Length: 180
Image 1 (tube, rainbow, N blue to C red):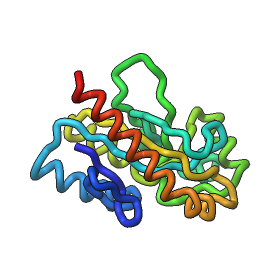
Image 2: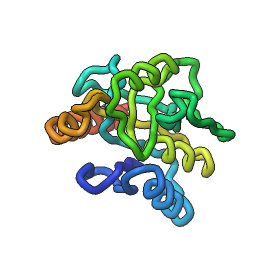
Image 3: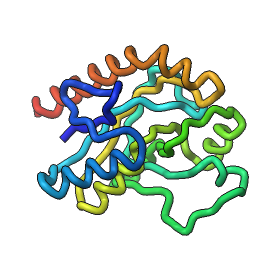
Image 4: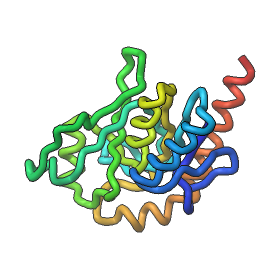
């Protein structure tokens, strides 16, 4: 099953789950309780902490939930804050999820030092729910912006093209898989 966030980030071939960590977790849990999918593929846009370029396509099966306060030693968590459905030895780009968008380049560099490459608001909760229901899952993302003070303006400017690129990429991958 292919899923996406929703609101202004929808696709004709994906089921919207909600924006942010909470909405997506609630709605995906509800879906899994009543009609458990065999596989989950989340598609969406993401911000780059600096190593990925605008309109790059990134595939991942690993997500983190690292809040900005953690980066300055202003917070800690007793919870596991990295999750992966990756069963191969291949390293993934780690996708950080938070209900907040990073707009500080110095903090973005700290994410990179932790090995975290991009951010998307929903992916951590998607993988957490998939793990709970024992569903293989992954994500495909298109970079819309860098995580700096222009993040929102760049996101708005690049969002439609990113959605088009994501659609083309996912539809191409589906054709490849069904041709086998």
